[in-house]
Amino acid sequence: MFMGEFQHSVDSKGRLIIPAKFREQLGDHFVITRGLDQCLFGYTMEEWEKIEEKLKDLPVTKKDARAFTRFFFSGATEVDFDKQGRVNLPTTLVSYAKLEKECIILGVSNRFEIWAKDAWDDYFAQSENSFNEIAESLVDFDF
Image (cartoon, rainbow, N blue to C red; front, side):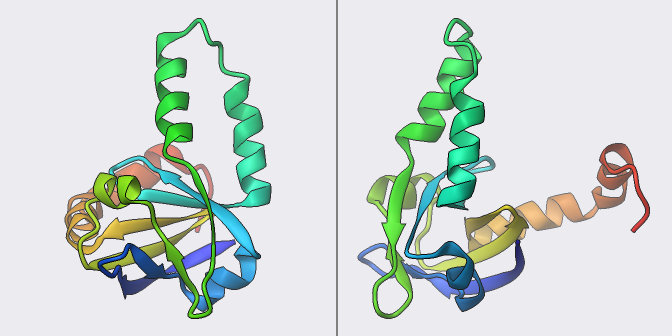
């Protein structure tokens, strides 16, 4: 399970350090793709295969299904670590998530997310005020 919030920088070559806690879970290689809310999603190979199975069952006759699978799979790339624990992000993904320098890497259960720091700060500030209402409408158990 991925959890926690970490701050790292992406360099001019698109290299980003992945937190050591996450590297242990990810193994030798894993998948990063476009996520929702203009961030990147990272998955273990095992989790990626589960998602692939679910998405390939979407009906090709449905316009939204075609659009989402194109969006999700066309941005996907298999990555591995260099000796410093960094991954090299493709320019298409760096551009999509507007990663310029400071990044936030979040653990979100079965995946991790990579955000531009400014985008994360804005998202968090907007969501923070409605967290209780969101939890009440979605979660059906006590914390």
